[in-house]
Image (cartoon, rainbow, N blue to C red; front, side, top):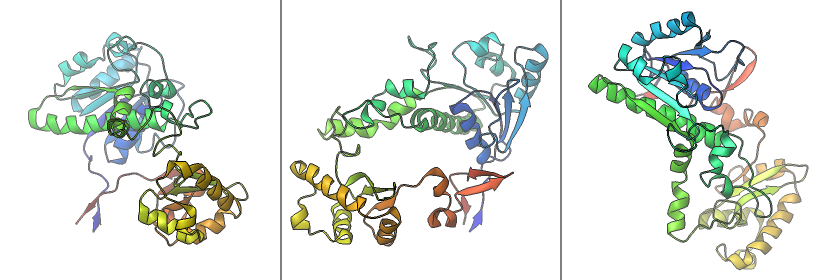
Length: 337
């Protein structure tokens, strides 16, 4: 199998600097082989991983000369994207209509939190605000305290960057057929809503509640949650299916009859307490070794620094080092048979 990690080779993309989802979207496109030219504001923070594989130019778009430099790139580019509030690029003379007059086939991506229209379109916000409006944030965390922010991977990167990239890739295919570009309205709230489809499906099936700590995937079940181990470690238990659940009980030496039915809510508190006591009695290293060669779906909870050294991750080369900086490797991977 020959490796091919450059499916977007010969595709030129202009990334107009921003924070959060825009640099990561550019990173994804560069990882796929696109020639990404990042236009950075003077004095902008240099992001070593998000900027890998890019050509970075420091330009002030309020300067006629610097703005013309970007305009001169448009005829030979396939896509351009920005992450400003609606109307900002139009004021600079770099809005979609301005760019399409120069290159009708250009893909124009617009990355925002709230979208290009609606009462909140011009409102400031960050990941926590966007996912708060979608129901995603409310579903996360323990029932007896406020919701727990899941870093910024759900909104900025999941609902934002990745949906922008999906839109650009789809639009490139369309432009190849028709010779016409389009404008992509990539809103973090829209992408996050899309990812919440499973919750709405389970709700329709009366299998999900608005209350935290009562649902299949939010830690309410003793067979789908994390447990503390001795010496400040944690194990992730995810044996949803009965056969994996039975294997976990077997590895722990628990009698299924004594432990009780997996799907009986009346037993969950007692079962959780039992598993809490068991996992706390030994170190994470002990449990890792015990569950290593099983299908019990019980795995260690690693720190981001530990993760790169796990044997499976090392075998897959999930991390690389460039200029003394550890990078997550490009994903996904491509092969040609």
